[in-house]
Image (tube, one colour):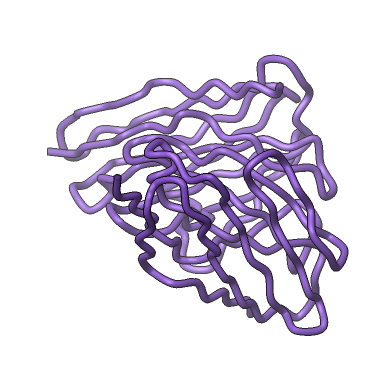
Length: 115
Length: 110
């Protein structure tokens, strides 16, 4: 089945640090990747849609200058949380899709804790 | 906009059958998906319905009625490992982009 690898699994860092999270589709070419954020006991909130070779489309309320997304190839998308603060602490999950109505396959998520 | 409603919690007995309902409101519609998420883990895909009717995959089945903007996930022969959160998700504005419901926490009792 489709495999999506997300790295790192967890990060603990000081306030003001920028953190980069990688999402790779290991056995298929993902034309579209998605980034979600999930707070404890809540649902997944879509942050942005990332298409290879073009700018990401951000959901309303998501700061594009704070959450930088790069999708340079069909197998890799990165999310950089710039100047992270404690309120950015959350579970960040990426997913990848062949496109169209194909199901999304999720990475294992990155637990980010900002001290 | 898009919105989905599903029960927040459901409790069932091991070996029983449980149905998790989902109603949605979207301006467009491509399909309804179901995902399972265990505590601390990432969501895993269970099923997808684009057309009306029942889709069966082993112990899990999913149903869709587009005219009623309604679907459900049916879990049979419940096992303790089925204790998890279940999310319905709708593809409304585009085929690939999905919006998740708030999730239903399923607890299985021996």
